[in-house]
Structures are given as structure tokens and as C-alpha cells.
Image 1 (spheres, rainbow, N blue to C red):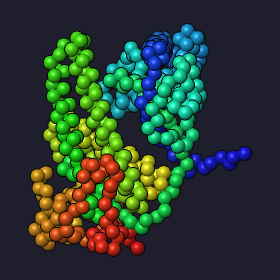
Image 2 (image 1 turned 90 degrees about the horizontal axis):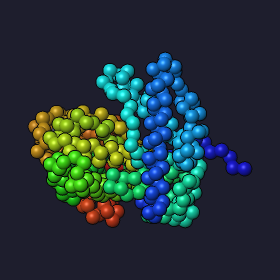
Image 3 (image 1 turned 120 degrees about the vertical axis):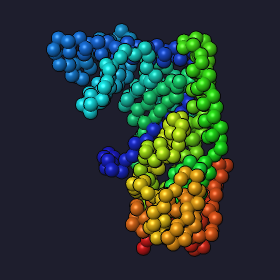
Image 4 (image 1 turned 180 degrees about the vertical axis):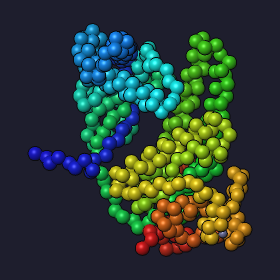
Length: 405
Ligand SMILES: [Zn+2]
């Protein structure tokens, strides 16, 4: 018998794939999602009613009610259990908000769910076919192979009405060999990322283009009458633009984080700081996109590092841009200042490169001295897309980035 693996050696991941249900299966999926909403609403009403009578209801009580509903709705039993879990999760989340003094309303009825959750059982993946209990067979586009043990699958309908399967997987960690290098990464608007060994990764113009289109579509949508056919058309167009941005970004971020984890033992990053971003940008949409971009980046970096036995260190982002990385003098910078000039020691270097050295020092206690007059190594959008990252050779690089001995 296999020995139970130590929990520490296991990492949980999800893999998302597009799926293509036939019309008949699609109808079944939608019907299930409607049934889920009905079950959710019934349980919610039950709890509200009992509460009025002064009777306390627990998660186990509502779970018992599911037995009868299972036959009526023809939904897989474990899927209904997940609906009960989601309901109670929402109840707890709401009461947490109340505790923190937030004004909150009541939980509302749902018309339809956008997910169907198969946990532990009721599904089977064979080749590129996914079998779902009570539903049937669906073709999956497996654009990359699944590694590890599949523990569950979530069927999702996107806002543009595309179908996805999200497989939840447990994987054993795959420790990478030590490289002997540390680096920090400064995330930004002008450059997507700048490392402390002087590599700058482009922030693709493509993102700006899609962003502009989203703004335009938002304006158009706001002029349409809600519920009209034109409104629906405009809504789907907007959702598609968002989806495109998200997909392109995701792919981009995957490539960068994979490269970082492969090439450095320790990676220092700034904690995601909304305040800094509010300061740095004036449009709400911009902020939203930046936030999702950076949080996706950190999310990928953390799980990939964990899986590979690498370390990610988070540091406080305060003053990393304004401090001279050579002498520690603090300078007031505006966002348009792309070059850092120190009036104290005379250092003149790229603003983000300067910040990355401060981030590195804050994270591991030491950083190489800044190198003046040596251009950053630029990595363009297409180089990222094709994973063609430059190597700062360890000998010729006086920028450092080598692990402190
Ligand atoms: Zn200085």
C-alpha cells in the first residue's frame, strides 16, 4: 500500500479548460444551474422562516433537507451539498461583515447559478471526454496536460456564455535545483516588471488597446436601455473584451512567473498595495485592471515557488521608489519622473531599477550597489510570449543578483 504522503509535500492547483457541450447537454447544464438556484432559495427561505420563529438552524439541518430535493431536481447529491456549503459560506461572510460594522442587506434569492460543483465524486475524465453524473459526456479542450490527482471539477458558464471545466488537483511538489541567485521584482505601469539584476519586462501596448476598447464599450452600454436586446448585445461585447484582456494577461503572467521561479532561489516582491496604485493612477478602470494584474502575478508566483521549493519574500512597499539605493537619501518623485536622480550622492539610474534594489534590500537585508550607465535588458511582449528571456550571465553581470554568501 502506498504510504500516506505528508501534507506539506502536496500542493493544490486548478486547471481551467474550455469545454464544448452539445446543445442537449447544454440544456441539461442550464437546467441544473436553475435547479441549484431553486434549492438555494428554498434552503434560504427555510432558515429565514425558522429564524422568525426563534429556532436556530445549522448547516447540518439544511443538509438533511437535501435528501428529498435530490429526487425532485435530478441533481447529483454532492453537487447539492456544495450548494448548501455555498449558502452557509455566504451567511457566515455576511455576519462577518456585520460584525465589522459594515452596513449589509439580506441574502437574496438567485435566479441561476453559474457553476456546478462536483467534489470528490460524480465525474470522470477519460482522454478528452468528461463524464458528469446526471448530465452526460462533454468534450474538453485539454490545451495542457493535467498533472496530479483530480479531486473535483467545477463546471462554469462565463458571462459570455462559454463553458469551462476547472479541475482541482493535488500535486506533489517538484523541488528545483538551487541556482544560487536572488532577485527582486518591481511591478509597475510603464514597465510590467523590473528585476534587481536589471531586466525590464515590457508592459504591452496591447493591454492599453483593450483597455480603451473596454472604456468605449462601457460608455455604449450605459446608453442602452437595461433589458433591451441592444443592451444584451452590448453587454456580451463588453464581457468579451474583458475576457480577452484576462486571457492575454494570464498567459503573459504565466510565462514571466515560470521564468522567475526557474531562475532565482529567492524572489522578493512588494506587498500588493492599493494605496500606492490609487496614487499612481487616476482612472477607476485602470486601478481595477492593475489590481487584478498584480494580484494574479503574485498568486502565480507564490504557488509556482511553493511547488518548486523556491521562496517568495514580501516586503512593505513604502518608500521603495523614493529612496536612493546607493546612499539611502529620500527624494520626492512624481510619477512622470522615469529617472531617479540623487541630490545627495549623485546617482542617476532608472527609477524602477532603483526601486527593485531597495525592495531586494528590504527583503533579504542586502543588495548589490546600483550600476550606473548600463542599460536595462529589455524583454519585449513577443519575447515573453515565446519564453525567450535573456540570461544575465553570472560572470559578466556587475549588477549582482547573486545570492549573498
Ligand atoms: Zn544617493
